[in-house]
Image 1 (cartoon, rainbow, N blue to C red):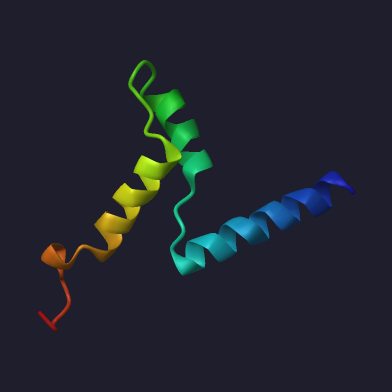
Image 2: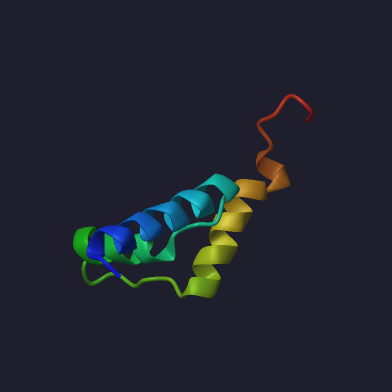
Length: 66
């Protein structure tokens, strides 16, 4: 498989995940290691739970329905 094909597949996968709201743990880890070296990195489970709570937390409802 060519590297161009692999990049296209990776891009499509990331795009699909972002469209449905699945957080990207790999990018989070890269960001933390580059910009915050020495600070702890959340595990995938903790990261996923935090992202879900941030997105769907009913106490922070900003829509007009509340």
